[in-house]
Image (tube, rainbow, N blue to C red; front, side, top):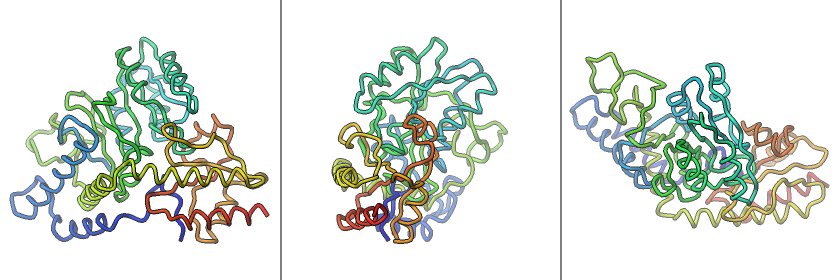
Length: 378
C-alpha cells in the first residue's frame, strides 16, 4: 500500500509510538489523579510528562496550560463557545475547515457574526492587510488555520497575531496541518490559543488533541464532570488543566502522543518539512507536465506552503480518480475535505484529489503514484 493521505492522519506511526501505547495498556492502566496506589501514580506521571513535553515543544507558559482533548475540533469548539458572547464579531480566513466554520455558523443564531478575510497565496503582506481591514470595534477573536488542509497555503500567523493584538483582539490558530510540520511557539508567535491534532504531523494516535492557552484566559466550559478534584462541589473547578478535562482521559493515546512528539523532536521539524516539501515539489513538477492534469496553486515552496497538494484530471470527478488509485493500493483523499470555504475560494466545489506525503514516504512510491496518474490520463 502507498499511503499519501497524511494530512488526514499520518501512517505509518513510528515504532516508538506503537510501543509506548502497548506499554500504557500494561503499566498505565489506572485512572490518574484519582487514587494513591502505584499504578495510578505512574499513570499520572505519564500524563504530566506528556503535558510538560508539549508545553516545551510549543512554547507554552507551563504544563498546566496544555489541555488534552479528543480532537483539534473540540479544542476549537471550546475557544469559540467558551469565549464569544452575543454581539461579538469574529474574523476568519477564506480557507477555513468546517471545524471552525460550523461552530461559528451555529453561533450566529445567538448573535455572533463573522467576516472571512481574503488570503493571498505567497503574498503575506496582502493577507495581513486583509485581516486588518476585517477587524471591527466589536471584533473579539481572530480564528484561522495555520495552513490550508486542501491547498497547503500557509498564513503569516505572527503578523496576523500582531495586527490582532494591536486592535485588542485575541487570536486562536487551528494548527491541524502545521503542528509537527513547521515550528510553532506560543509566546514567540504571540498566540492566545493553539488548537492541535495529535494524529497528524505529531505522529500520535487518533483521538488525541490539545488546546494550549494561558492559564489566565477566562473561558466557559464545553463539558463538565468528574475531575478528581473538589469532588464535594457541584461547580466545575476553575484550576487548569482540570477545568477543561472532565472524565477519564485517553491514556494510551496521550502516551502515544508523547512518543510521537519525541519522534518529531529527535528527527527535527526542519528535516521533516524539507523531506516532505521535496516530495511535493517533485509531484507538482511532474503533474504539471501531464496532459489534462489541473493544478490550482503555484509550485509549493517554503515558507509559503505546507506539504499538501490538490489537483484534478480534466473530465473526471475527483472520486473517480481516487477509486482508480484505491484499486491499485494508492491511498489519497478526494472530495471537499471538510473545507468548502477553501474550495469556494478556488472554484473547486466539485472537489479535488489531495496528496500529502509524510516523513516515511519513499521516492519509489512517488514514482508509482505518477505512473498511475499517467495511466488514468491515457
